[in-house]
Length: 211
Image (tube, rainbow, N blue to C red):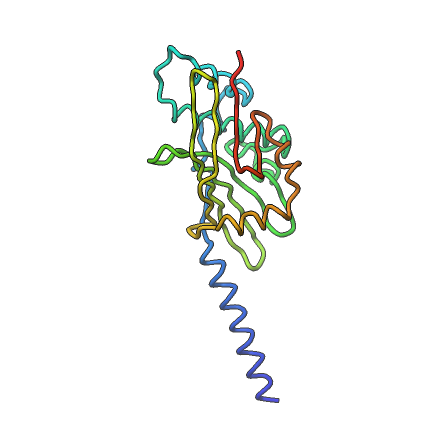
């Protein structure tokens, strides 16, 4: 009996230690401070922000930094897609403290809390989507999708192509990503994007400017 109890205790310790190791490894906390305030708390609506930024981005006479404008444009697209197709109450930088205002999607397993784009030093766009779980095993983590940017002002085209994917600091292989995508409803995800075209098979986002 004592031997069986010892085995149970050791097994429980190994399981607990394994869960702790995994959750610590993927730990990556994103807060509302990371969100672009001009997009999420500005006076301009997301749709108007998309239009205004696109007009500036593709204006041949405007010499503003193109990659900074692309970052802003993508953040407006993200926020607009969330409000229109995922959670109309989402307002993470507002005064509302209800769960619906602070969480994009709430599930029994975890909550998707934040999503935003940022520009890195290599002029790539990194899309970050954060997840949070309160119950055991609790964790904060984030997926970071790094996109190469192809931009042509004269042709009015913008294409983002996925280059790397990370969960926390760990890179996810393309084979693993394909396996994950095989379990999701790609059409629903692609249709949730209000502006431009998301293609999960090609792992691209494209937008064509029209006056």
